[in-house]
Image (tube, rainbow, N blue to C red; front, side, top):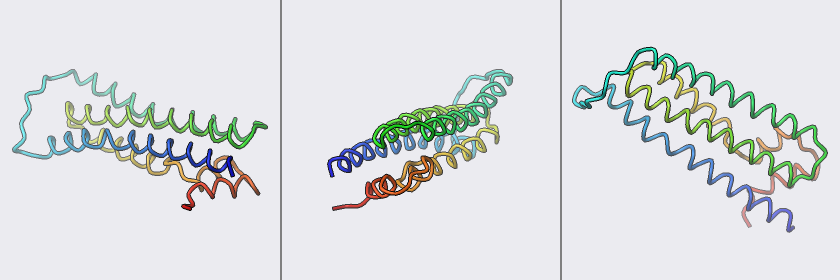
Length: 164
């Protein structure tokens, strides 16, 4: 029972932190998107070199690929290790937070890129970022599937979301 209470507390902290990292770039991107699509909104932004925009978009795409690769490589190592469920969940939490910090910065980079360069590439990159955010949000089902838990461990993870 103590194990379940401990796992619930860890999961709640992870869930809260992920939601914060998910929500913060959204207003920045919304502002940039409205700015680029509104004829009434004028900002005196400096002209930046086009090459800088290309580099920024390339970095955004590279980080999108990198966050996916790093997360799944880390999960594979956790899966193969012979450690306790609590340690597996802790490592999953660390990997998830690393992933969402990258997605957080990618979201802001997309907003900045769209604001300065008015390029559809940044809008598409942000849409892909939102897909990763929605598919990567931690849930007991995702934890159990990613870590390939079975039996009692799987039941314990599913019990995280049960309210008492």
